[in-house]
Image (cartoon, rainbow, N blue to C red; front, side, top):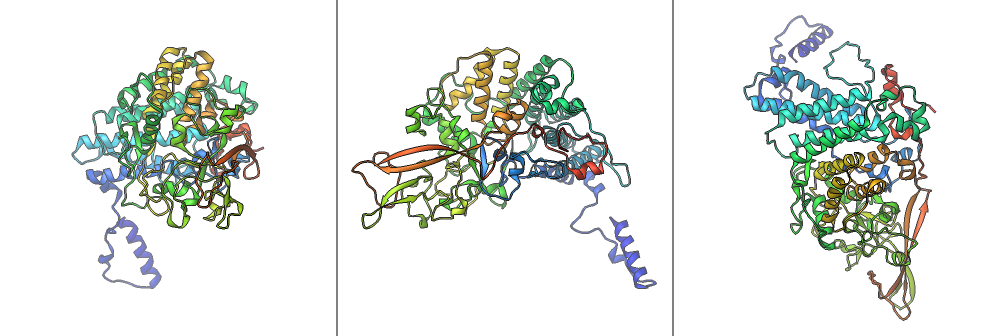
Length: 624
């Protein structure tokens, strides 16, 4: 640092024609910067450096544009954000569409480099606290493994870099094979787990359980169809034509052994993480308790509504927020809540997600069933009511300008009588024809509820919530264990754990096996983990994306007509004794004409990155 300032001074002196003067006052270390070598002499400074590596986590999954809107869970309401580039299948190295900073190529390698710096310096660090030194090494290993995991699950295999490059080195690095990437991530996760064993870091930092959960996820993905090249080639002509399949998965080997490794890793993560939240039930809870359980899980004990159960033990590794910080993730309610509350309706549920919630008796919902069609939001899986806001759903008190004492979601159009008793039709306050911020209205007829603090005193458009983002939670590793058990033919084990998840939600036990159990498991994970960045990857690794992510958007149209002899003056409220309601699912393509092409199984490397690193191998089909 001093050398740099001396060099700048010499240039200034020569440029100014000065021969000599007293310049010692310039030969100082800037007070806001610390020379890098000093960080490893002091435990607090070293911990501060490692803390900085966590910045790559950003806001977790709470970006304004959520990954759910790149799946069959949601659609992003606002145009011009390049999300349609992804969903309409026009990605290419020159047109990357929307890329979030939580998995962006340059961002991930930036923080991988920071982890490499820590791992290069901590072994020779001179501060005395060996326990702290071990913990920081464990955290650095975990963060490097996590960021590589992000790259691998979005892009396929990537260059593995474990050294810190100096100036003027050759930065062109070949792409590692899929097997090499998986082994490196697992190795880092194992190192992290060993170093973090017995440590109790602050909330939000890596732990042994977090490292084992990461290992569990990586090995589960590695065992999946997309990364078993014989299976993937049979399902996709694009993957079958790719000249270097070793960059996308395993070209040979014992797939059963991979499932066994995934199962063992999941069990180890379950044991390390503890029991989670209410996963010890032997029978379903009530429907109301199931709803409370699921809201409690999403709130993770951080809601301002203290009537909810404490469930913080469900999160293994999370991104936490504090009132003192004006972080974007604290705006989840503003980003996604109803426009009739002055919110922005960003990531709204689509009908295909809503329709997948079962009836309370465990049977599928169907629009061809007259009873279901007449009352589509009655007697559904309790998790539906904790995840989705629908026409007539109870919600918070409206702002004063809304004139709506009922505090119900209004996404339909309704008969009403004006002050003179004249019949007219009014669009709901939460529609795109609302009198309140119509441009922010939902296109689908639904709103996201999950992860929005239900505290009635918290107004999302002005107040900020503090709900954490769950990178890993106990239920995910339980799902990993279930999936591996199914693939190994251990149906009884899988069914036992799958029903524990259902019992917590208030749903009846499943009694299926074989292929039907696999489908039931996939359905259950879709419902339980909605909006948690699972569906994007699951639909790809299971290779079911053509029939799921590639489906057209489905909206809902709701119309309320007076029953004979009935009427209502403003303000409107939902009342099936006064109205006959009709619900019509509508297929919609004008906002996003969703399609699926198999090159979308992986994100493309950018053209700029390939130009700078000629040793990278292109992804399948991206030049076409």
